[in-house]
Amino acid sequence: MSTREKRGAALKAHALEILGRLKSEYPDADCELNFENPLQLLIATILSAQCTDKRVNLVTPDLFRALPDAPALAAADPEKVEDFIRTTGFFRNKTKSLLGMAAAVTERHGGNVPSTMEELVALPGVGRKTANVILGNAFGMNEGVVVDTHVGRLSVRLGLTSETDPVKVETALMPLFPRDAWALLSHLLIFHGRRICIARNPKCADCVLNDICPSSRV
Ligand code: SF4
Image: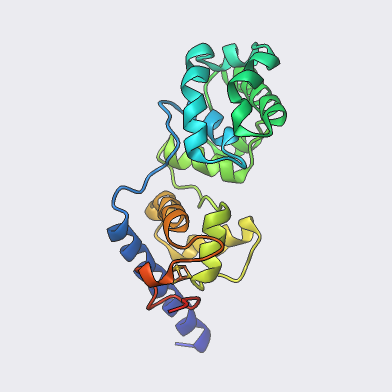
C-alpha cells in the first residue's frame, strides 16, 4: 500500500470512528425542523437561513394552516406571507423566495415538490444544500451531504478536510462515509455543533471525540 493509500485508509477509519461515536451519543439525531410533507420542509428550510430551527418551528404552523399547498402559497399576497414569517429575519427576501419557489413548483411540477437534485436546484431560491435537506429528509434519498455552518466547522476541526467551501467540503466527506449514512451524518454533526463543538468556545472537556480530534483543547 502506498503512503497515499495508507493515509486515505486512516482517514476513512477516523471518519467511521467519529460516525460510530456520534451515533451512540445522539441516537435521536434527526431534522429539527417540523414538517409533514416535502413542501413544508422546503418552506421551513428556506426560512431557516440565518435563523434558528426553533424560531422557524414557531411560525410555520400558522403559515401551513393558512397556505396549505404550493398553488395557495404562489397566489398569496406577499404582505400576508411577510406577516407570517417576519420574526425569522430577512422576511422580504424569504417571501420572494417562497413565492417564486411555490410558483415554479405549481407550474413545472403540478404542485408537487420534485425529488431529483437537478429539478430541485432549478427552483428559485433552492441551492444544493437545501436540495440535499429535502432529498435526505423528505424523500429518504442520500444524494449528498448537507454542509451548513456546523458541518463545515466540525469537518475542519475533526481533520476530515481542510476545505472551507461547502461544495468542496461535501465532495471531501462523501467518499469517507457510507452513502446510507450521509443524511444522518449531517444531523449528527449539527447536533454536536449546536451542543458541544460550538463555534466560539468548543466544550472539548465534555466531547466524546476529544481523544481523536486534532483540534481538541484538552
Ligand atoms: S474535541 Fe473540541 S474541537 Fe474537537 S470535536 Fe470535540 S469539541 Fe470540537
